[in-house]
Structure formats: C-alpha cells, structure tokens
Image 1 (cartoon, helix red, strand yellow):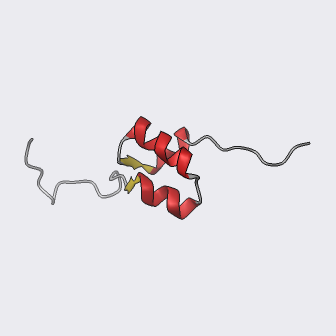
Image 2 (cartoon, helix red, strand yellow):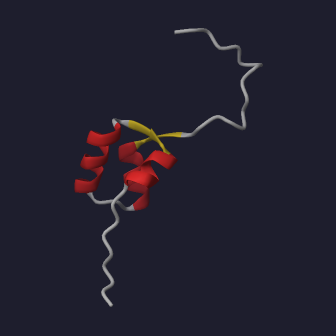
Length: 62
C-alpha cells in the first residue's frame, strides 16, 4: 500500500462508499435482496455499484 498525500487528492473525484446493509435499510430494500447484494459486492460498495446491481420488483401490473 502506498502513502497518499492528502493535499494532492482531488476531492471532486472521491467516491462515497456505503455499507451495503445500511444502504438497504435506508432505501427499503428487502432482506433477501440485501443478502444477494452482499454476496455480489461485499460489505462495502459505491452508490453507483449498488444502483446498478439492485433488482427492483415491479408491483404494478398493467
């Protein structure tokens, strides 16, 4: 692992990393989907990774 100088980091390119369980709790995702996401992504993931891997079940039928 290399040392990163905090003064040279670009704050605009930094990613927010979520705890997958916390993200699921906040967004109302079911426990079964939470378990699947943890298997796929691990305990921590960016919001983009989470959004791209969530399977939303549509409850409205036409």
